[in-house]
Length: 212
Image (tube, rainbow, N blue to C red):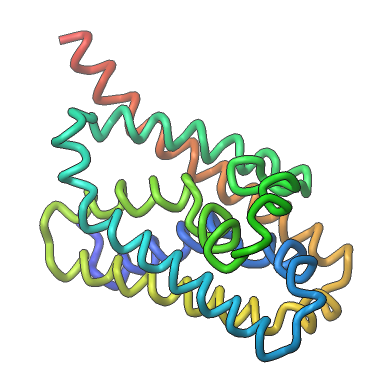
């Protein structure tokens, strides 16, 4: 039975939220804006989330053209996404910042324009999030209501991400070190579960076509 638009939108929201992991990016954001006035730190958060929103919307809408131009199979992309998600989930399970998003070297290199890089790209709109929106848009099968649900989910996740960023110092203080570690590990488990689903949903049709 096909999922209803609101059910598909909820799936998109949960998938993108766990992939972007707004809580996991808070320590980086706080460390990069600790010397800025409150007003400037809010501007950094707004510009970063708007940049990530634009990137994800463009990839969601142009995903099919990317597939056609490069001759990319949806099933093969599902497998690649599954591998990426599993690695990211494993690193989150170890309570570490994922290397596919950002690292200390990239932060120091792009500190002059932290809102766009590395906060907007690749910390928020990283390869995992970009792959997610392309795959999820492909799952809509041309249904306008589901496409709108996906776009609404992208907007909702990034709006929530903005709220987390502007309240980063309060959130980090309230959760404490142990709370942040627990939440990151929990999201790691969810991401790994999504990874398994993506991997086998892509592998199954390829194996079937090979056997037949």
